[in-house]
Length: 358
Ligand code: ATP
Image (cartoon, rainbow, N blue to C red; front, side, top):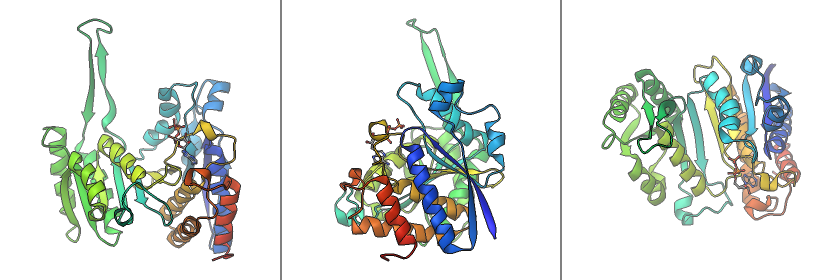
C-alpha cells in the first residue's frame, strides 16, 4: 500500500488549528478508503520559531522538506513581525526554492454558502485560476536610488521569460483539458504593456495551439474583472501573470462567499519537488485561540493535495463531505453564520466520511 509522506506546517495564528483538523480528516479518509496511507510530520516553523531563533525556518529547511510528497501549509504572518520577513523567509522561500511555478486556485460557490452575487449568477461560478508564481511583476527585480531626495527614483521591473510563460501556459492547458468544458481564457494587458505582455500573448498562442480540442480566448485583465461579476458562467480555466492572477483570485474568493473556505496549491508540475497546498485565508489573529476557525478551507486544501497525489476518488469524496456539511448548514463556524467550533465542524466532516448521516 502506498504511504504518502506529508509535511504538516501549521505556521501562525489559526494555521496550526486548521492544519491539525485537516490531518484528522485526512487520516479518517485514508482509513475509510483503505488503499493508501498517510504519514504526517509536523514542522513548527513560522513566527514563534522566528522569535526563538531569528529565522522563519532552519537554514537547511528546504533540504528537510525535499523528500516529502507534499507540504500541507496553514498560514503565516504576525502583527509584530514585518510581512517581508514572515512571507519571504518561509512561504515564498519554499515556493521559490522548490520552483512551485504554478499557483492553482479553484473557486466554486459551495451549496448553502451565500456570495455577494445574485444567486443565479453565483451558482455559475466554477473556475480554476492558474497564476504564474515565479516571475513576472513579482520577480523582485528593480531598485531605488536617491532616497529622500527630490530626484528619488524607484523601479520594479517585470520579468517575463519565454520558458516561464510557456511552462505556466502549458500547465493551464493541462488543467483546462482535465475539466469538462475544456475552455481556457488567457488574461493579458498587451494593449498597454507592449513588451513583456506582447511576448506573453505570443508564447501563449504557440502553446495553446498544441491543444486543438481546447477552446482558447484572450481577454484584457480589466475586462476580465467585469466578466467574472457579470457573466461568471462564461469563465472556466484562466491563466494570468503573477500580478493579474493575484488580483483576479482575490476577486474570485470574494465572489465565492468566504475567506474561510477557499484553497490553493503551489505546484511544481515537473513533480521533481514537493508541491505545497494551503487555505487562502491568513493567520486571522482576531480569532486565534478561540477554537472557532473555519477548517473547511483546510479540508478543500487537503482535497487538492490528494488529487495532486493521484488519489482523485478520495479527493472527490472529501469535497462531497464538505458540500454536504455546507448545504445542511447546521454545523458551521461563526464566519459562515453558524455557532459551531472548529472541532465540531471537523467531527461533522469525519462522520460524513465514515458514512454516518450520508
Ligand atoms: P494575514 O495573515 O494575511 O495578515 P489576516 O490575519 O488579515 O491575514 P485574513 O485571512 O486576511 O486574516 O482574514 C481576514 C479576516 O477574515 C480574519 O481576521 C478573520 O476574522 C476572518 N477569517 C479568515 N479566515 C478565517 C477562517 N478560516 N475562519 C474564520 N474566520 C476567518
